[in-house]
Length: 253
Image 1 (cartoon, rainbow, N blue to C red):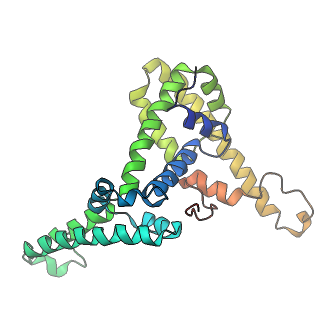
Image 2: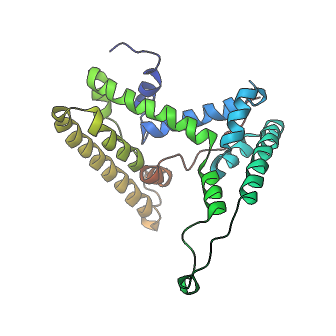
Image 3: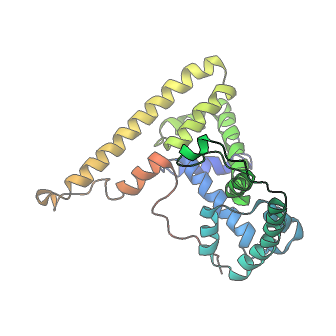
């Protein structure tokens, strides 16, 4: 199948020969978003972008990424106008807040599991993130592209089943998406092949982890590390995704 602009990143991810091509995609998307929000193009100075970041804000995880990125002025501008948005919302929330009436059973509960209006607003704010939302949109498009290539590109299918598989979270996403993206006949081929791929590669990582531990035995000090030297970060990635050993992503000068 002839490559198109929207298929190139996914093909690049598949040929990177890493533990999970969708982790590769997500890292690229996230870094692109950090460049967009805080990079030299100065999109944070555009009113349309700032309106969106003011309304959505950022999660704790991406605030840390933004701090590490290193653009103090850009972060300052983004925070300044976002604070204005939050103060306005907070003022309205406090103005219209009415405490919930206590009941007899409340006295015997250690904690109230149901948030009041202020608690619900804060919870929604914690979940809202401009980078998470934009990255998720693009990620879902790549999930769609994955199944387009799987159906139409024999080389892609071959590369897939010779790969190192996926991390568990992205494996779950693929299984869920396959239910609606594939026909019943295609599912009969896809799921057994995918399950076999995952089993093979989980076994490979288990062996790497076992040998890494054996290397700490004094009798194996001179033995070769084989493929186990970076087994910790790869094992963590396989279980939860991401790149635990990545260095901080910073603004390019």
